[in-house]
Image (cartoon, rainbow over all chains, first blue to last red; front, side, top):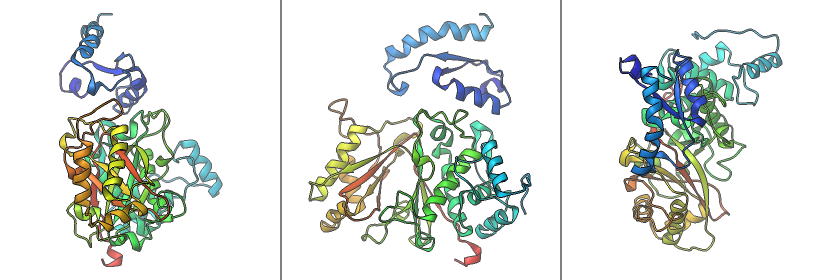
Length: 73
Length: 334
């Protein structure tokens, strides 16, 4: 949201179990309708993901990010 | 002079019902934060109500001394405890204390408040038998005050910004003192750069606490090997934001401490021996390298009572342990 406020088109990605927290942050930040893209729950901490695991998720998320940025469903 | 909104009640029961209804408590009864009491707490700490103790920028939250004082009253503190509470709030809200993550995490991290220096005995903060548990007003209420600030000011409310899957009883309150009289070990706050006569708190956000029991070892090395094995089994993840400065707190119990005393081991000896072992390369999924960048990142504290051959590991969440001096209460002239 802060990037958006700074004029940088942005998409926030959260995993499903943190959606509630992200929505709460959106509410306290005065943007209750801010849209998030949700990824499946990461069973291992993302900090220790391999490059391949990151790329796998990127392939899934990239179309969703593009759609959010361009307003296409 | 307080500035907060005022609410009038016909009885204390009515007040409690309303506070529960509004979600302003941890589920236990509270002491009514009357303007007079809040004012007395601020006066005792020499703080103006509007003074800012810290912030959680991601939550649009700023914590003032008045807000902290109100929650300290609610927690059941005495006025003379408030300088310690204020220091604990400052420590927790330090940017590297990472309030947002440590109070919102699915893991249910808790905050340990460790008290050092003269105020520890002045306030009777327990540091020996039973010091992690109930029965000591200073321990119970100082730790609770920080948690009420986290709830009522920092908005870490279960189901809202607190997303813990289980949470932990340590989130009601977790405060204890270092048993500085147990040996000639340099107290934690002195190791961290403060003068011995300066009172201080160290706030450490912990992912979990693990009891390291060892009835067999009879040497400092043996006890440390047990501690290292437990740390490596449980794991300490690193984080690029924290860099090399990660912490783990090790509370050395009375029965283990005797071996360090007998062999003349200082805290630095413990830190160096442990660090080389916990940072050795992993050998399996249950024998992992701990991401602690320096020996000084291992914070060694003496506490607990006699009898149980155990020490405790307070394994970190994504934050640094922050040590803050306790401001001298002006009315005590110290």
